Length: 194
Ligand code: UDP
Image (cartoon, rainbow, N blue to C red):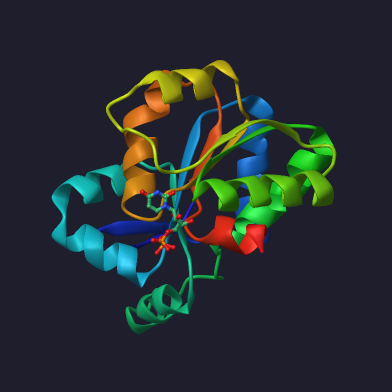
């Protein structure tokens, strides 16, 4: 693959469709995968926070979430093909999960937002196995939540804790899982909840 590095963050340069297919392949092969959907805010934050930069660099893919990133790449004369937003990627993967009957876990948001997003998913994607859900306001030092989630063997784990928390949570906990595609989806859970 072809990459474009913006201030230390290495963006994959693919079309949306190719990115979706890459992730579908990982889901089918049950290969653990960490995806960061990075906007300019995330890049600027990572530039100034070494620990966060390490989390972002530990991801398998960083995709350009928004036009600001495309503009920066263009100014560097290394244009990126297309925007790959967290929301669009989330919906595309939920559609695939619906076709394939994959296990999905929904982590994050306020309890009522999380619940409403789960209800919407059940309605719009009835063949998804929503194996569990939890709001995003839990005790970080309590490891029982990640143990619970990993025991449910989700294929797709949507982590909506906002940045930088969601990337930190994924980077610190992914080793406890045997499979799963992990995506920090930020405020997308609020949009799905409606
Ligand atoms: N969120 C959460 N736990 C937290 C902080 C935020 O679950 O400790 C949720 C919040 O309720 C919202 C989502 O993360 O649903 C996105 O939050 P925010 O808008 O702050 O992040 P951004 O969209 O800027 O990444």
